[in-house]
Image (cartoon, rainbow, N blue to C red):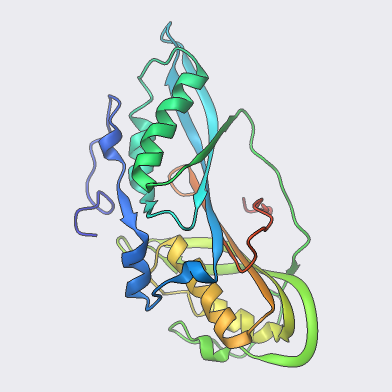
Length: 266
């Protein structure tokens, strides 16, 4: 990570430059966490929203939009978020003959960065999607670990099929140590997870350093290993930083709901 622009003083670009995009290797990230080949039992995607997309038409008139992009969790690379912000900023003074021409440029550059096929959509207003997840934030717990501790996760001998969430999640950027806030939702079927233990586990990330995608995958695999559900989907809706919002989803299901919900904080 020493070559990343993240955490360094930055001169903001004034001309289009696709080389500003910085890929992060998923395999290296997973190996560092002791995960050899998660694709065998994990499906998912990374859903990004950029609220600061702007470009020029052929008459030099500014055009704005909200960019939605998604790509598969099996892609070779994931995108470093500051580099995406810089890349999108480099489009601000670039002329495009049409929105389709802009999308074509974005498609080419983002596919190259992720080494996968990225789905793109430009809208003029934000999506508002909400799911009925039961919040566990008001539960009473005595304490939580200062380090991530999956051993606190426990189940009881009752079958459950439920959706639960917490908006108290915080982790830290592994480069800048800035806090990242999120609503984490867990949808599963199997032995009921004791909600207090799930909340304690999620709170133990409070001072953990990790990229958004890494945190969600660790949560997914920890719950899978400790609680052994029949099916599991973990979503994290991170609050936007630098005009960009990242929402990773990981699931045991090959076909899962790829939409993400927004609470009042988003």
